[in-house]
Image (cartoon, rainbow, N blue to C red; front, side, top):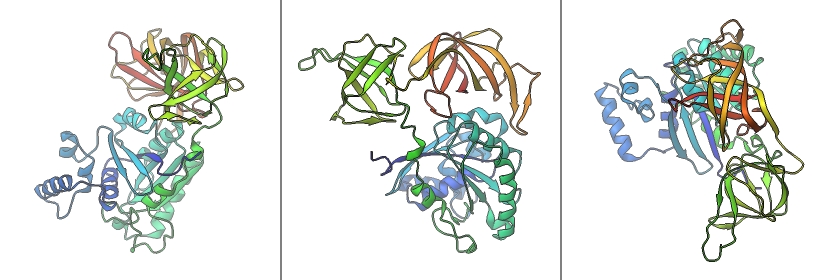
Length: 418
């Protein structure tokens, strides 16, 4: 199964305000020649207006007017670029504490989290917060970039001290792969090109690491999960009897001939074909969108899940989850919400709030049960009908959900099943 060739890598940036996240992304785009000429000209003009001698790299990502005026990022800015080795999607997330929800949103699908630390300030509360969220979201890889090394005379001692500080907090995290890089995003040291100012650092530049990072093993290839989004009945010549179940493979590998079970009904069958617009496939794996046909005629609809007969998720009506509250309005006890889980949509309520997490100290707050914007808490969820769930750490698709307020239709929370 060829997964690594020109594979898409999603990464998110996190750090305190003015740590240089947008400048780092601008430098990545600029030095890897991923900027269109007209875009470059516009940013050169804006940089001159602001009185900068060179190009203000942060302008490549700071798209909102408020951000450009304040020189900060307040929304999640997504950028796409490609190199001969790999395609990338960047989520540039805000540093302010009041934008925790934006970071959770931007980082939820990331393979890699780049955490920036200002070399002058070292590990601060924001660093701990962002490391905790990256760990909570089970982002498999963290790259700690110690930025602004030019402002500490490219000191190896300063860099080593910061690594020691970060390692003290990383022992509490659930991330196995943590790497460190000394960089200057402003000058370009160790971003795309190796630094001549830090010959004591023998590692690869950041882009080289991102291009060569092995992420195929991050995909769950064992637990086959296929949430059905819609049933295809073309009813036209050549397809009169065609009944295909369309959706996106969440995890695992599907092949024609596989014995499957449909949940929640429990009916069994075998896969007849796996179809795409380009024809039939010999196998399908995450995150491919396909249509599956079965040997038997089974009543299947949106929200059902096709799984392997010998490997099934748990069907649960009540489960614990870590919840990030995303809405301006606080939670209301015993309120019914709509819960969106894969392609399944039904009613649910927050049965119990066990504790909230102080994401600056990692301590539990057990006496405050009201959830307000940006709060992260452990809760018990109760649904009207069973959901086919996995733990979030095993499967980020079938282990996550969102809660919708039925009266306003606003998304109020995002959850990770424990």
